[in-house]
Image (cartoon, rainbow, N blue to C red; front, side):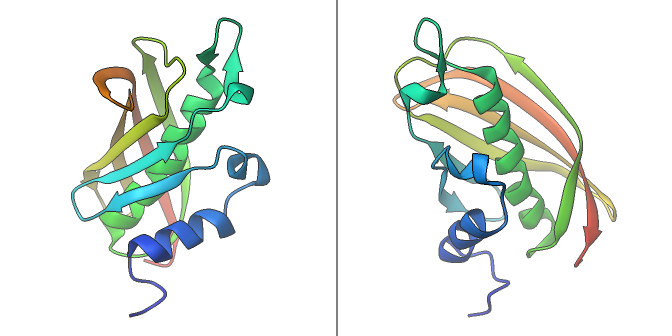
Length: 142
């Protein structure tokens, strides 16, 4: 097995290695990865909540953005340097006192741009909390 293979172990290791320290405080974990979908978990933490016990939008948008990096890797077929070009987030209901589950997928993978979407739900509740669409640029490593 190569260090560039998109295994669960390699992806979770990369999650700990390349992201900014504040992303590490979210305690994200990739639960599954294949060529169709990424599933990532953000454990509930009161430190991520705003008034009223609602998980703040900034945390949710960080989860979407981080999940999209791994969505890009599936579109590319391995690790590469990628960066956010655009992200649009639509908040549909609050996430309260539960882990947030991100499910991301490639919409279209071009030569230099990858389009994807990430849907957030709360653990045990399939109603959509937030829907994010993103465009990423492939910088190197493809």
